[in-house]
Image 1 (cartoon, rainbow, N blue to C red):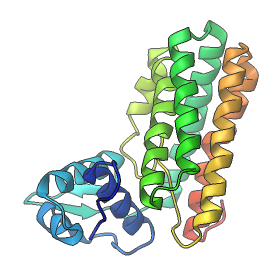
Image 2 (cartoon, rainbow, N blue to C red; image 1 turned 120 degrees about the vertical axis):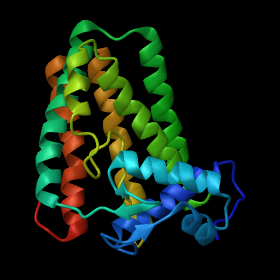
Image 3 (cartoon, rainbow, N blue to C red; image 1 turned 90 degrees about the horizontal axis):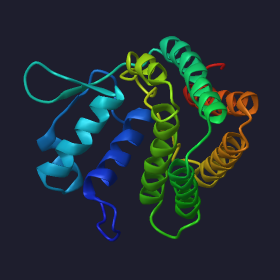
Image 4 (cartoon, one colour; image 1 turned 180 degrees about the vertical axis):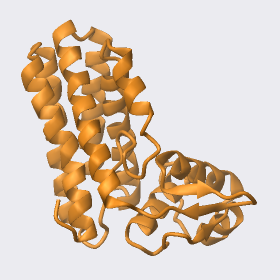
Amino acid sequence: MLKDSSDTPSDQRVLAALHTMIMDGTLQPGEKVSEVGVADMFGVSRTPARLALRALEVEGLIKKRQGRGFTVQEFNLGDIKHAYEVRGVLEGLGAATLARLGISDDIKDLLTSVIQDMDHALNDEMELADRITRYQDGNIAFHETIMRQCGNPYVSYAFDRMETLPLVKLGTVVFKDEKPEQELMRLRLGNMQHTLILDAIIRRDPQRAEAMMREHANQTLVYSALFSGDDP
């Protein structure tokens, strides 16, 4: 049963736990999951269970069945690799466009605040699952803001066509619970990259912003391959 000792909403803690179970193979491809089953599993009401399952469906990790409930999706690493290559190009283009056109004070302040909040989350004393959930919330906000507010609506339009593939959704965080300190270090490195990307955008250096964003985006692809035991 999930502990309820933090301010993190129950649906976010359930989502983080289910995400880990799918990634580490506890929930196998083809396995059925339901709102009632998840609620019983974690000792929560059906509302947070429903919200968590809806988020996993959007992320492409589960698929709605014709009847009730969902089925865990099977991963095709080849498709994910190809999608990440395209995502990296689109995110790089978004960062470069924002750098070239110039960033508004509101967007700059938002991205700065998001980076600071992720840094605080990684160095907080709250429960690990809550720290990762808070980091992922910030990571989503960082990547979504740059892609959606870059000044070229066709960047996000192109990305929306493939967003439902597993793990491709902007801001998805892969976290391996067996090595928490190593994983936290990796996320801290990722947040340092966020700072450098924002700096390049603020300095209106589109080439540097694009190169750094593409490098940053591809790190998840490399890690996904390592996580599965395949070569990146």
